[in-house]
Amino acid sequence: MLKLSERKEVVPQNFDVIIVGAGPAGSMAALKLARAGLKVVVLERGRHPGAKNIFGGLLHNTPVLNEMLPAFWERAPLERHVFQKVLAFMTPTSAVSLTFETEGFDELPRNGYTVFRPVFDNWLAGEAVKEGAQLLCNCTVENLVKKDGQVVGVTVKGREGGLRSNIVIAADGVLSFLARQADLRQDFRVEDMGLGIKLLLGLPKETIDERFHLARDEGADISFLGTTDALRGGGFLYTNLESISIGMVVHLSSLKASGKSPYQVLDTFLKHRHIAKLIKGAVPLEYSAHLVPEGGIAAVPQVYTGGMMVVGDAAGLCYTNGINLEGINLAMTSGVLAAETAIQAIEARDYSAAVLSLYRQKLDDSFIIKDMKTFKNAVDMMHIERLFQTYPQIISAILEKIYRVEGTPREKIMKLGRKEALKKVKTKDLIADSIKVGRALL
Amino acid sequence: MIVDDLPQFTQFQVDEQTHIVLDREVCKSCDHHACVHSCPANCYTLNEETNRVDVVYENCLECGTCQVICDKNAIDWSYPRGGYGVCYRLT
Image (cartoon, rainbow over all chains, first blue to last red; front, side, top):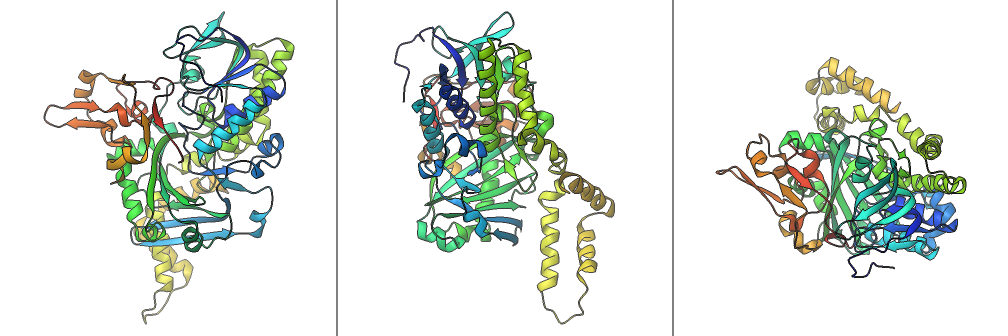
């Protein structure tokens, strides 16, 4: 890994492309560009790629990763492949869960792997370096350098001089100060952000295998609804080989209005009976937090301007519909699409916005924007307050009525369901919520 | 609570210069102090008597919550210099 020496000055150099951020989007772009024989440099503010990066825990199957690095799973530092998907509805005193397992998830390419970002991102950046990309760590990019309205380089915080290139790819994460500086986006809004917090807990492999009914390198991915103390959001749990990633993502606007502290909500979640038995005896290893772009397609900024493209979280390419939560696969794919565009622009020696607009077109034609459009109404659905406390309570109440034996006459499921629901929600709200959920998912 | 032992679990390369600067006059007149309760690393504290907000940048996880949640433009927040700040090992 190349590191910038202790010199205070960055030697002015001209690159074909400067990539800001050695996360999954930046490194995939670097890999693609280096393979095309271009002079590319990646600037990473951490001491190593991944040092600043966190996510829930799941690297989704990403066809473009399989294409660029065939059979990467034989070499990449992966934890477990996700075999078991669980959706759990929780109340403070109960838990209802739906578990899905299929042998199909054991086949290659696997549907997803749990990974540690500081480890995986480091590995992926290393693959780009092997192909000839230059990696400079310990470099926080501060400003864009512009000439005639076009981006032509960047400056690095605390160092004189700067780096010049024909194209800058901003892979600088959810808080893309570069996209803001280039006037590609408005200021960051609480309405468009989620806060993810996570605790990594160490447990022996055998204990995890037994508790979650897993074998070999099989892993579990559990999503929780109703564990966020009425905040809009959800909990997650992923199994790694010898540890568990557990945490939650909450809407920032909801957190702000509540006056609650995120770590207190996490603490209550960890003490829930159902969770406490899963993590019993575990040793805390690391605590982390980061914002997540959750504004959906409406919050995607302009993704290009003269001399610059924006990829991954920096471009808000992330979505959730309550069941799927995808970002890293969108990020890696967008990195490759931006790199493809850069290659075409460099061949044509034209780095204008008109040429780089091809990148947006490529995004539109890919699953990235298509999926974000398909679930554009999910953003609205995820703002239904009742989804995060009232409905999990209703589901639990219905099941309790169904299972409890009391020597009193029973009612059919529809009737008792309606009764339990109306105890907690008004008919008109129930209808309005059903419409929103329907519009989002059905 | 987990956050109390934060520096034991999570590594930091502390810079001698802060990357978070508060406009204390604005903070004094703030009606919600959302930064104080929302920070997942508990970096912010409010002195109820003097209404003064203080921040400990050394434990900052660089999540960005405070500067997005502040609607008074009172938090001047930037990424730490290269190599400094939080340094995740696993997570």
